[in-house]
Length: 314
Image (cartoon, rainbow, N blue to C red; front, side, top):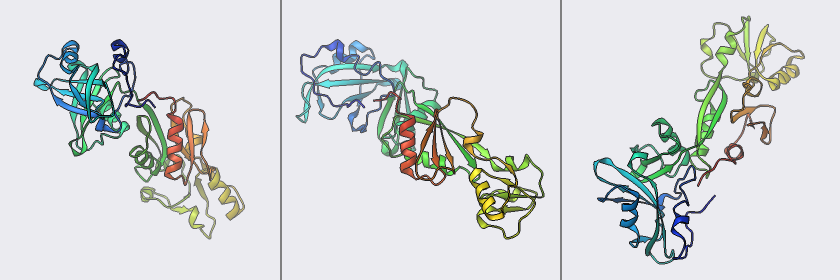
């Protein structure tokens, strides 16, 4: 990942600096202390902004400036300084990333400005395109932005209930703390109740107890409770559940598949899902990452890092 703080000589060519970020995607200042917010009363043109800031001093940690003009007009610039050691140094280069026509300022106190994925999600919800800037005033009144948002769109395929499914919640939790490219999550569920309604048995056998099964009109048994009496049931379960059934009862019942890996649509969408046949590690299957049923946060983070490894971000 490209670092924001760079040592630059005073005679560095201005035209080179003007394209340092302009052609990049998913530019998010992390940590966001590198983003300064300043009132600006001048013309909102590239030339006027450069003239206003060249030669002025800036704090050594400031790399970007969000300009707040009149009539809710905003702009975003990246700056370079003559020296990065003193507390303040002169601005030697100004790169205008966005003018009012491409900047949208959003106030949302629920958004963590240090979370790339949260900024990308907010930009998506507000229909901010890949050539625009989403400026966010978020939690703690802090301000940051995402320039040219183009996150990885990740499908989480999981069984429910419970709702939301655990894997989805784990992905959201990891995105809240891990240093990852921006990822926008789309939940796709396999509803066990729909699987049950696809057959009409005397009773059902489910892998484990879960809320919401009281809606079924037939008796329900749970494999992890190891019912003493074998019933004329249909197993709603995966290959691992079938293995358990063989061990417990010595036979194979009628079965409806519920493994996300088996039920995944044939597509190339980046996907994370669980499989009970995995126990100790994750594995890649095309454009999908498969984690064990009992995956921990470290496994989920590893899977997300693998899937997003080719996403461009700064």
